[in-house]
Structures are given as C-alpha cells and as structure tokens.
Length: 240
Ligand code: SAM
Image (cartoon, rainbow, N blue to C red; front, side, top):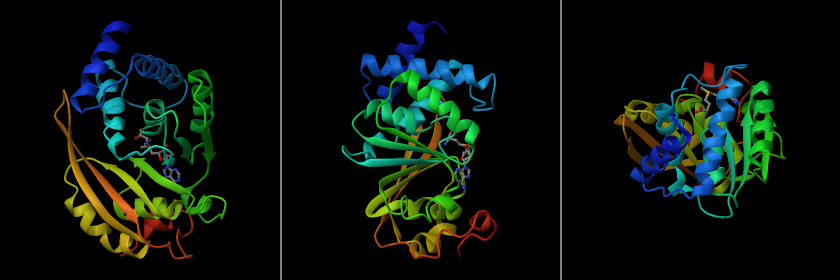
C-alpha cells in the first residue's frame, strides 16, 4: 500500500472508533509500522504484517483503550512485545509517562531503537518478569494505569498486573471475544489481589468485525505481600 493510502485508511479506521488522529500522529504511527516490520525481518515480533491488518489489528485495536487514559497518569504496558498497546497510546498521549515492560530482552532492545527513532520522550523500558519486578518496592504499586494485551488468561494476568498498580489506579485488560468464562474464573483472583471489576466494554474492530472486550479493573485495596508469587507459579496454579 502507498504511504498516502496507508495514512488515509488509518485515519478513517481510527475515526470509526472515535479516535481522531492528527497528521503528526499519523506520521509517527506510519514510521512506527515501518520500524516494526524492518525489525520483524531479524527477530520475531508480529505475525501481522499486511498493511490493512496492521492498521486495524495493531493500531485501531491499541487505540480502543484510549478513552480510559486520563492526562497526567503514569502508565505501564505489561508484556508490551513490539509495543502494543503502549506505543500507539504514547503517540496520541505525548504528555503521559509510560513504561514499556517485557520479559524478553531482545524485544526491549528493539523498542529502545524504535523509541529513539520516533523521538518519544518520557518512555522508560524495563526488562524483567512481572512476578519478580513487582516484588521490588521501586516498582510495586507505583503506576496509575497498567495495560496489557495478549499476555495471559485473566486469572493469571491479574497477578502480573495488579501488584504494579497504586490503590485508586486501574488495570486495562484487552481481550478477545467470549470472555464470560474467563471473567468468572478470575473473580476470586481479582478480589484476593485487591481489585474490583469496574467495566467490561465490548468493541467491534472496523473492517474485520472482530469482537474485542476491554476489562477495566480498579485497584481498591493493596495487594497482599505474598503476591505476585514466584515466576511460573501464577501460570501453573492460578489463584482460585
Ligand atoms: N502486548 C503485545 C501485543 O499485543 O502485540 C505482545 C503480546 S505477546 C503474545 C506477549 C508478551 O508478553 C511477550 O512479549 C512476552 O515476552 C511477554 N510476557 C509474557 N509473560 C510475561 C511476564 N511474566 N512478565 C513480563 N512479560 C511477559
């Protein structure tokens, strides 16, 4: 797809979900797409490489959570991979501080290059596993908003996310369709870890009619000290 067509389609598809992109944001997103695809030749970042898919399944999907992002909040994107949803959210909220967090150092190195080339300010990169890093006082209960897409099932995910968030903050969990069972299985874990489900919002991605669910979990009390448990345990024995 020509650059001009890519940019027009991106603008149109984002407007379908009520995100009205400015030209400079579109330029940055376009540049970001090219960087991801360039790096993708060397290290595995994404299976989504066609332009139309990239626009909808990476960019528009990431931007569906924008309505939950307030100004002046610190955000941590847990299991960010190639930067989704964190980088698109940062591009359209340049004033917010954001941490891009992942357990694969190779991906963090790629993100370093991408952040530099996009000249994004106030972005911190952290390499580590959520189970270890959020035990550490420096990172525990420090963020207003934690985001996450495609990292784990909800009962596991909340153990990786809620310890990072301040009381009064929230987790924004991006999920596919048919989430009812996943939510039911996670209710006890959410409560034990100090969370409360605030909203479950269904979104339909334009063009492909794909259903997505955004689960917003408020942090209402501190997470007990014993969580998160050691690496691998949340996945092996989810809280129930
Ligand atoms: N969020 C991105 C997206 O939607 O395109 C990447 C999704 S990818 C399927 C999952 C990512 O989560 C991987 O990059 C992986 O390294 C990271 N991850 C998985 N478990 C993690 C953990 N316990 N702590 C930190 N990162 C983790």
